[in-house]
Image 1: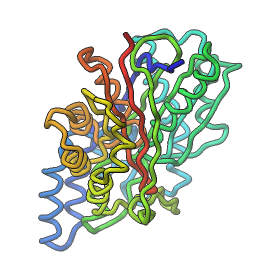
Image 2: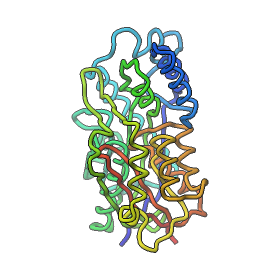
Image 3: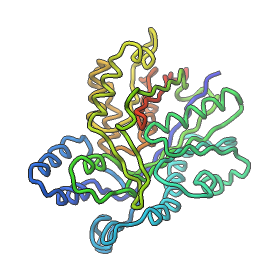
Image 4: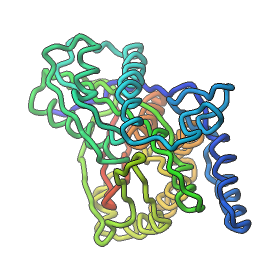
Amino acid sequence: MPAFINAIGTAVPGHDVHRAFIGWAEARIDDARERALFRRMAERSGIEHRWSVLPRGSGGGSPVDAGGFYHGDWPSTARRMELYAVEAPKLALEAIADLKARASIEGVTHLVVASCTGFVAPGIDQIIARALGLDEVERILIGFMGCYAAVSALRVAHHIVRSEPEARVLAVTVELSSLHLQADREAPPLLAMLQFGDGAAAALVSAGPKGFAIRRPFSIALPDSDELIRWTIGDSGFAMHLSGEVPGRIGEALRDPGLRARVMGEGETADCWAVHAGGRSILDSVERSLQLDPEALAASRDVLARFGNMSSSTLMFVLAELLEEPEHRTGVAIAFGPGLAAEGFHFERAP
């Protein structure tokens, strides 16, 4: 019995910080040539907006302006986690409210929450369940898996429904990447930070034949790639290391016939692709390596432009777009993250 992603709701905060970040980051780079490189790469990023839960500064400016969260003393990890504990459940509940406008969540039996941008105990799964009045729901919290955690959350929901056909699973992703700005002054780490924004998504997964059926999950870890994506906890937030080699390594892996068969399947067809919008260069690499039509990643590129990379929530936003386009019948979802690993599944629209 297949499990179906019946509907997906999404939410982002109301504070667009993308342009403010570019101006702040550019001013921090002392070397003129490196500054020009940063400006050129920012213009080519394919990102137009990124949203943050952080409040505006006292004068109405961005978090790096006077009175903003990042102005003055650099905030500690503890201070960032205080905000996470309040804002992460709040944004997740906004995504759930959007889901409820698309599908009833009455009778939810399980709650699966994925997040890698914060920690709090009691966990945000408990906070969300309490806010929704789900006193007897079974909870699972997936933490610190990075950008492919949406696949992990949906895969857990898939297994629950297959083992308990009456189950109705609420799968939630929530990421507050803007809480982890770092005090770097060089172009590579600033370009990595340029990708990320805040967002949450919520999906209802059940055996009810509506939406996308989850088929053939796959999990692939690339050899000798541990250093390419790292997410480390420091005294001033979580620091992301994102190597410039990542798009090339993904492209190289997807050209390998054996790995390609694991992703695409034997003799299977896909009329759409839900690829994690980790950055323009990653999408370009996937498109070239799999020899996809230029329009195949339109949903991923649209999400990247409107929201940036929201870590685990990004793939859910892409799937949400595809769900609204009934002409898409079969597809492949894939996301990349620390490891370097690729996680995904095939999907098929309910008849």
